[in-house]
Each structure stands twice: as C-alpha cells, then as structure tokens.
Image 1 (cartoon, helix red, strand yellow):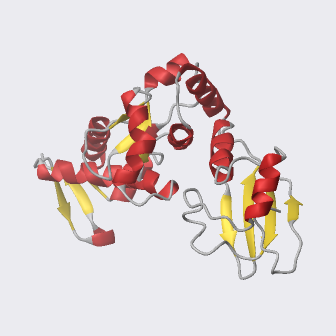
Image 2 (cartoon, one colour; image 1 turned 120 degrees about the vertical axis):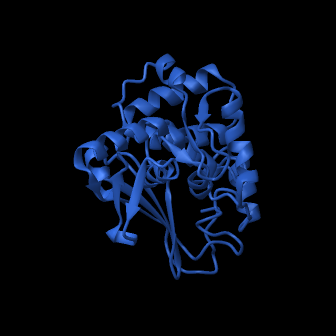
Length: 261
C-alpha cells in the first residue's frame, strides 16, 4: 500500500500457490529502481503513507524491506525473492520450498555467536546455500557494481574466518563456508564435490586419463563428478597442459585430451 502508485488503477494481489506466493502490485517500479538494483536503491513513492505506516509500527524504516526478505529467507534455507517488472505491474515471488534445512542451523549458529550486520548474514546465507561461489557470481547475486562494492559484504566474514577463499586473486576466486563453522554448528548436510580442492581435481583427471587414454572434457566430467563446476575441470585440464602432462588435439567441441606418457 505504501509503495504502489495511486495514479494507476488496480488492486494489490497476493496469489497463493502450493509452492510459492506471488505479491503483485499495479504500476511499475519508481524511476531509477530496477529488479537488478532493488536491494540497494531506495526511493520514496508515497512519502506521507510511508511516514504514517512507520509511525503506526506497521512498516520498517524506509529501504529495509528487501534486505529483511533476503535475510529472513536465507536464514530459513530458502531461495531469495524473484522480482519481475511487467508493462503495468511489479511481481515478487517467494518460494516455499526449503532448499537446505542444514543451512538453517549454520545461519542460526553464526547469528548467535558472532556480531554480524545484515549484509554479512545475507552474504553468508548465499554462500552456504550454494556451497561454493566465485566473487563474480556473488557480485551478480547481490546485484553489486564491482569487487570493491563486495568488500563490505564479504570481507568481515573472511576476517572472522567464517568464510575461506581459494588462493586466486581474481573474480574467479571461490569462497566457501569454513569447515570449522560447519562442524561447530553441527552441520549434517551431504558431502558435495562442489567444495573439492583444485589439486584433487587434477589427480582425478590424471587417473581418468590413465585408464581411458583419449577423452573429451564431457567424458571426464561425467566420470569424476558432475557436481564439480565445468569451469574448474576445464581450468585444471589446461594447468596439466601447461605442466606438460597432458596434450590437447582438435578444437572446440572436437577437443580431446591425452595423457603424455
């Protein structure tokens, strides 16, 4: 009610489905606000309504709504809200399904034991939910401008040793929840290859090549673990080529990799 435009006819709808809820408002987003920057951009549409609802304790401070939605959903092991802007409406979809109940335990423990701001809780929740995220993917999920903007979200988690990263110094650097935090929070999730170290991927590739001699990257991916991101396998294949242990024949989708005896 506080954010909808009253120059446009239409009602606010809350559409309840078995797996999700859609909240639909008439009118488009305020000028300068987009589905991509809605987490960071604040603009009053109905200033007096906003002040009235805040005074009646029916509404949080201005600009805190989406931050709270992100924090609450991630703390409960759910996906972040999906915002869609149509020709004459804005829709926000909230999924019901809990992606990981074990993430809830991690978030509750971290929130209780460490003095973290909302930004850090959101960032930790995203990393825990995805198991492993690159800097570029984090920037995309948080709709940030660049790596400098990510620092306020991520670096306090690194300083508190709640999150650890790979040794790379680029947007391809990966971040994952510190295993000690998972242990302390009594995390009991499935063991996943998403968090596997690079040197272990190299060894798996070498073992695969010893058996199958000439392979495509797709062959390697299927055999050593489809959970491992393709780019990590591709990267380690090229590390092995640069080390002189593997040679490549063909190009593009016809590329094959052979172990140098």
